[in-house]
Image (cartoon, rainbow, N blue to C red; front, side, top):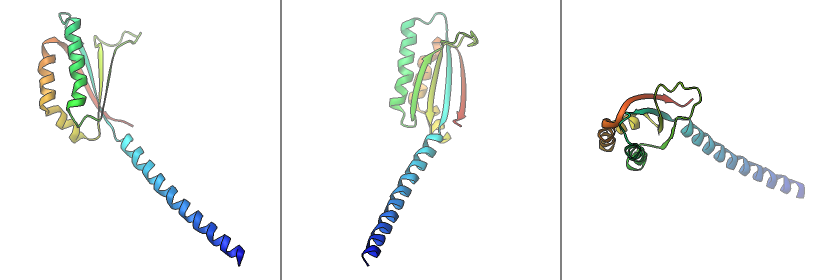
Length: 136
């Protein structure tokens, strides 16, 4: 009888552990799926030779500030080209903007703050290249 009681307690513990593990596994799967569903908006700039370093810095700061002002942006990063291959075709700045849906990206594109940024950028921009892709 005593062994049966231990066996029953052991089974109950095993079942409760399995349920807790399943809940954790489901949360990990949901988090992984959310992380995998990332739409990347890659923007490359080359600036006119007449753009001063101060003007370029103002544009860098304004672009970074969009991540604070526009809720649809889930992540933002940027950097300067430092490739030794010399294949950048004049593009010096790379910006990565991350969204979780095409709808979020589309709302960003027409957002008044994005339009303001475009107006600020325009006079100093030599060229731009934009590529959007789903993270694999």
